[in-house]
Length: 204
Length: 288
Image (tube, each protein chain N blue to C red):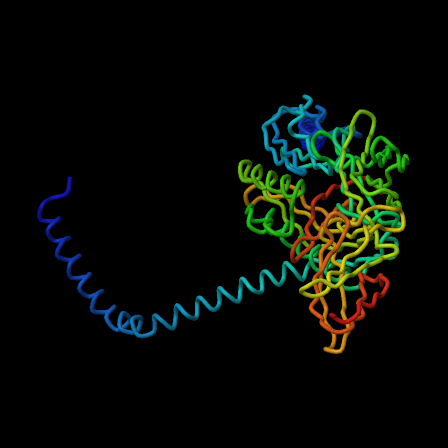
């Protein structure tokens, strides 16, 4: 039990202290109101650059080499090769982001059909289990092995090397450098090539 | 001194034994088929956490070491690389592959949907066998391609899939009309249709006669070199050259014949063309 006098004394002293604090805060409040817009602008700028650097870093970490000499029966034109290379690289960047941050958005665009279905399913199950995967230092050596006569589908064989980290929440439960072979089917869309099939195999 | 050593040795052996008892390891299946149940066996004793990380699967469960872990058909529907991770004091992992099952469907792409007759390498088709979970079947299988027009076989070929793909390319048939293209694999069949149309006209001939309002010019029935009537809508261009200058009229073929009315009072020379094919020339005298 606290005596009434003591309560009253405590209340007074608290009031005095808070008055002093307010007085002490006044100049800083003024400063804050003066510089607040600039400060927030500065923070927004930092965040923007951080996200830009982050996405650039994620993209830059995906190295893709595409070889089209073995492709047939249709020959792969230079422009087509560049388009496939660009979109395949983007697809892996997007997949890595989706699996690391457990979000669906990066999968919209680079993937379609069956590949998109299982990638979305993976993100859903990761959200449920609290797991995530981090793909870093990606290096893809890709061979085009089939390009259809009418140019509406291309099959790629990708020997991918990357660092794969599996996380349960923030705890790393597996961490290894791996080499995985993928059989990939890509089809052209209105403005890009999309991955329809992405299937890891023990060997080609 | 000896007593201390004995105590130390006892503690050491006890710790080692405890470690051995709880040491966990896991054994993954050597090969697995999509949609088939399988097990991961574990060694050791005590509780652990098991993770299955693969395409479409991300599972976490508590397990007892020393017991088999059951992987359901639903966990293994997508072909690819799976990682089994077992965590007790430390984590151990092992990877295994799930391959596609038996073919359950055929994806079949045919080009084009409309093709002129007797054109070299004009028709092509690509077939992909998939299992019931839409995994690409990479084990080689034979796909039979067949082109049929009015119960007449135009083309038939068995092609073995390579890297999960079978394809063909062939010349179009000689008769205009619908063609059925079939890809079959055991009891699976995928069917597409294309329309063969007449090729460029052969011997484009025109006739003309003066009428009250000008010159009526028309083609004889327009055929390609194989005798197929050119489809309605094919454009024939008539050109009249006279004293007044040059006049051009585009006329569509209707039921094999293209007609046009041309205004020209004086003597006129009329020619016709369709695509890259030129017809004959006719001369029509001046209006009396």
